[in-house]
Amino acid sequence: MRRLYERRLTTCSGGNISLLVEGDTTLITPSGLDKGRIDAEQIGIISFSGENLTPSLKPSIETEMHIRVYQNRTDIKAVVHAHPVISSSFAASEKEINTSLIAESRAVIGKPVRASYAFMGSPELATIVARAANEANTVLLTNHGVLSVGQTLLQAFDRIEVLEAAATITLLGGKRELTVAHLSELEPLEEDSLVINEELVQLITQAVLNNLKA
Ligand SMILES: [Zn+2]
Image 1 (cartoon, rainbow, N blue to C red):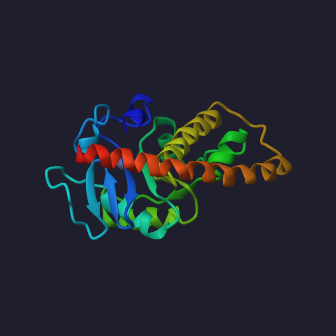
Image 2: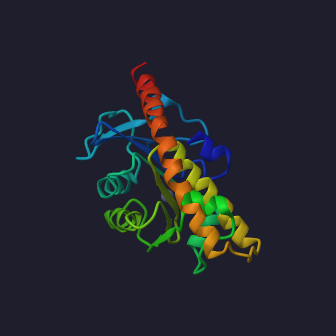
């Protein structure tokens, strides 16, 4: 979260990150904290049934959105939601972010999908975004921000960062797209990156849990 903030990918109060542990429990950044200074002991633990296992922390208003995404996407273990400026400007327009301009963006995120607008923190938003996350690993939340999923936090974070780069390149007027042949060459890279990152989830989960117990 601190990394998101320091890289200007979210505001000090906006956005939230979660990690799935033990099947139906999530570690999630709480509401109302300065995202530029958050520490491990300030991470909330919430069950899928909504039980707050860290009652001293106020749950993120987007907790239900995270849980619904995990319930729909049983293949992922991390969700990052943020408000990066350039991607969010696309989320507030009719224009799409072109991920076919740079090989990295196509390999890391494929094609983002768009979720229609619903009020922040509402059950409607959770339903709409979870449905959209079935279609892609990155979602533009209309008039709100972006969300990405990953098998690890690093992969989900990477997708937000690469999405923001792709949005910037689209905004700057990149027009020469990769050819169909070049795009098809990139498909295997997506699979490779998933395999490599799978090992990291154990390390990150253990590190966060150790900090919570400390
Ligand atoms: Zn938000």
